[in-house]
Every structure is written in C-alpha cells, then in structure tokens.
Picture (cartoon, rainbow, N blue to C red):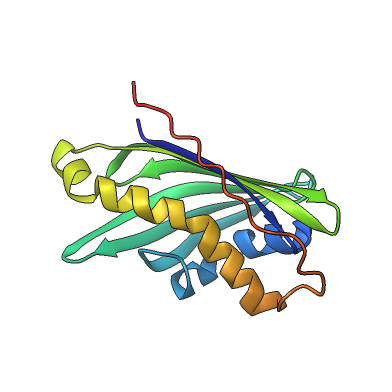
Length: 167
C-alpha cells in the first residue's frame, strides 16, 4: 500500500496551519487534483471535536473520481484525521498533526491509500503519489496567501519523505 509522510517546519503558528487544513471547503481553490469538495454533514461533540462527512471530487486528464471521507477535526490536540468511507479506494487514511516550535510550527502530514481497482491504480497511482507529495507545499503556499509572509523568515521548510513499501 502506498504511504507517504513528511514533516514541514513553517513560520506560521500551529493554530494558523490547523485552521487552514480544517477549512476543507477551500481545498478546490488551491489543492492539486481537487476539483470540488462538498461537506454533506457536520457534527459537533461536547469536547470541541467536529466530525465532517465530506465528498471530494478529483481529476486528472480524462479521469474523474469522487470519494467520501469522515474528517475528524480536533482543535485541542491540533490533529485532523480523514478516513475513507466510499469511492474508488479500498483504503485511504490521511493524518495532519501540528505542534508549536519556536516562533513557528512543525506540520506532520501522512497518507496511506490503495485503489480498489488495479486498472485505476495503474492509471492514477503515480499521479496521486506525485500530488500527495505536493500537498504540504500547497498548504504552505496557501498559508502565505491567507496569512502573509511571517515577520521572521528564518524558518526554512524541511521535507522528510518516508516512503514505505507496500505489503
């Protein structure tokens, strides 16, 4: 199963980056391959955790797919988890974690996925892999657009991909 993980050190606060990733309805404006996103349901828990059922449409050339995930947004733990519910995958799990570091923060991003269809995996697998590797860049650029350049430009983004061979 393809797996990708990266940690980025950015000069924005952990809460700013958390809020950016939690704003899923803005994804079509900047996220690679994302052509549309619709939140079908929102549920607030007593602990401040919000759970969304979100439908994302992705496309590349002539191939279009839509899939549904349960997105758990936990501001207390600064963690966002997307879990696959339905669509072209047999498995999809995406996790974001944010922690303060100095005047900026570390953003941990990981994703594991597997297509249900071997044919679709062959058609879109390499393209999905490239797109997922650009997700952290897309969010970092979005932070610059939304929040501006941080006053302290001393933090440099560092990406440490951790490829894990499939089973």
